[in-house]
Length: 522
Image (tube, rainbow, N blue to C red; front, top):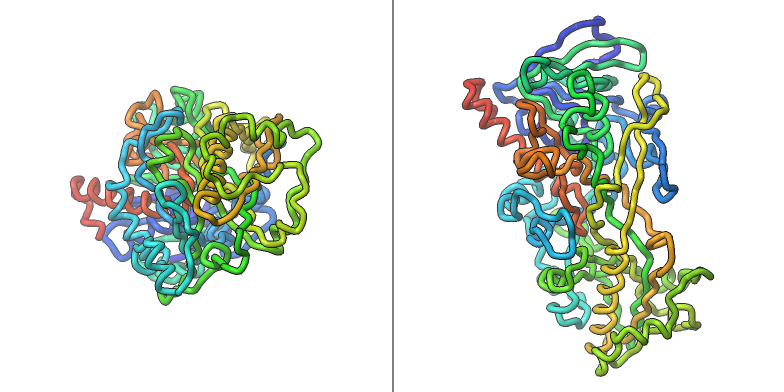
C-alpha cells in the first residue's frame, strides 16, 4: 500500500510493528526482508517517486571549512535515495577494515569480517550482482586480459562490480504489493519521541511540507536517513535528552568520514604497447553487471606500514595526458623526494620518479593516471552538527566540518612510494608522485559522496553511538541503519556493506519479534 502523507488526517496515530524512516538502500532493503510476513512494516519517505525541489531543499546545509561540497548535492530526498544517481560500484570491506590497527586511532569494529560474510553473500542477491566472487586472477583469465606484473605481496589488484541498481523502480512493486507493508510518501521525521519514564521510543513525529502532522508508533524503530541525516535526526530529538538522543558522550555527528579522492600521480609504462584494460575500462559480466580492477596495497603491508587502507583508480592516455597543474605553493620538490632515503631502499629500480614539477613531456601521453581513493583516518573533530539556520519545517539545518589529517597525506605518499618501487622493480616502468606538502592538507582532495561514521558502532557507549546490533546505546527499541554506523571506512564503496549490515539488522529484529511472540517475521 502507498499513502501520501499529505492526505492523512492531522494528529492521526498510525501503529505498526516496525517503522523504518528513509527509503534508500538501507530502508528499502530492510522493508524487503519482512515483505509478506506476519510483521507490519511502515516505510516513511520524505519525498515521492520523483525529484521535487522543495523537498530536496530540506537537505541543504552549511559547509564550515570550505573543503566540502554543497550538502544537498550528495543526498537525494525521494524514493530510492542516492541509489537513483549512484554509479553502482560494489566491493566488500577487507578483514583489516574491521581490526584495531596501529597508526589508525579509533579503529576497530565490534564485529569481524567473518560475522558479515554471510550477509555479503545475501547482499549480492539484493544488489543483483551474481555470485560472490572477487577472484581477480580468474576474472582476468576468463577475459584474456593482463594484470600488472607486480608482486602481489607489494602491490595488489582488487576487483569491483558495477551495477547501478535503482532501488526505487526495482523494488517498488514488490513492496507495494506486500499486504503487510505500507509506504508513506512526503512524510518528514521531525522528532524521535523518547518515553520520559523508560529508555525507549514512544513514537515518531512526522510532518509534511503542507503542514500535516501525525505520529508513528511501533515496536521497533529504524532510522535509515543516510550518514548525515541519521546524526541530524538524533541531535534534533532533544525533548528528554538535551544534547540529543544517544549523545550523552558527545559522539553523535563526530567522526564524519569520507573516502578521500585525490589526484596523486602517474604510472608510465616502459612498453606502452601492453594495454592493461581490466584497470581502465568496465567489462561486462554474464551475470548482468560490469567489472573493473584497481590497484591496492595488500592488507599485510597496510598493517606493516600502519597507514590508511589504500586503493587507486586508473585512467589511461587521453585523461592522463592533460596532467595536473603544479601549484606554485607546493613545497615538495624533486630534490626532497630524493633526500628522504626512499631511493636508497630501491636501488634496483629500473625506473625513477619524474620530478613533480618537472617537464614530463610526451611521456604522459602514454600514462596511467592514479587517483588515490583511500580511507579517511577517524577524527572526532571532523563532524556534522546542527546549524542556526532552519529549513521549511522549522528544523535546524545541518553543517559539515570535514577535516583531513597529516596521517592521510602520509598514507597516500607512502602507498605511492611502494607502487613506484614496484613499478621499477618489476620492469613495468616509472612513476610520478604528486602529493601536496603544504596547507591545507591534501589541497584539492575531495569526498566521494560517502557519508560515514557519524553514529559509529562500538561495544562501549563512551566510544560509540550504536552497539554491534546497530541499536542506539541506552534506548531499547531504536536502531540506525546505514554507513553512519561505520567506525572506519576502508577503501571500499559503502553500499554493499550498508546492505549487508541492514540484512544483519533485519535478522536481529526478526529474532526479537520471535522471542516476544510477535510472529516469525519470515
